[in-house]
Image (cartoon, rainbow, N blue to C red; front, side, top):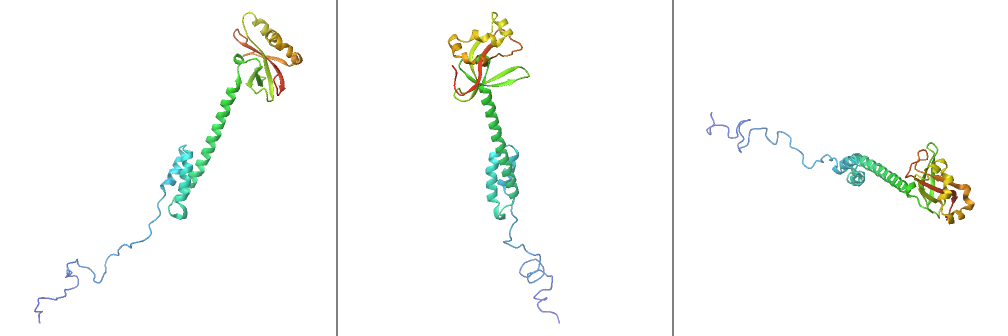
Length: 224
C-alpha cells in the first residue's frame, strides 16, 4: 500500500536536511573543528634581535642596553631569542671596552704630542724629560714639572744665524756658554759637566734653526 502522504515524512538518508542545512552525517559528524584556547608558540623577541644587530654595527652602548632588556623580556621562556640577547650583550660589552681603550690611547697620544718641546719653542728655566734617538743622534724633549723628578733643565736658547752657524756646527755644546746669561752661568758652575745641547737636526744645521742648551741632571727642583 502506498504512503498516502506522498513519501517518507522523515526523509531518506542523504536527503536534504529538513531544517534547511546541507546533507551530511547525522548527530554532529563531519570535519573536526579547531580547539580554542590552545597555547600559541612563543615569538622571537624583537628587542633581542635589535641587541644583536646593534652589537654588529658598532652601536655597542645601545647593544648593552637592549641586551639587558632582551634578557628581561625572554626570561622563563615567555619569548624566544634569549641567546640573541646574550650574544648582543656580550658583543656590546666588548665593543664598549674597545671604545674605552681606544679613547685612552688617543688621549694618551694627544697628551704626549702636546708635551713635546720643539727647539723653537724652548724657554730658559723650562724643565724637560729627554728621549734619545741614537740612530739619528737627536734628542726629543718633553715638558716636565720642575718640582717633580725630571731629566734636564733648559738654561740657554739661541737662533742660528750666518755669524754663529760655523761655531755651532763645529761644537754645539761648546757654544752654549756664549748663549747662557752671565748671571745664570755663575749658578751653573757646579753643573758644567752636565751641559748639553740639542738642535732641530744636528746632522744638518741651517740658519734659522734653534740651539737649546740644557743641564742634564735628574733633580726634583729647578736649578735657575
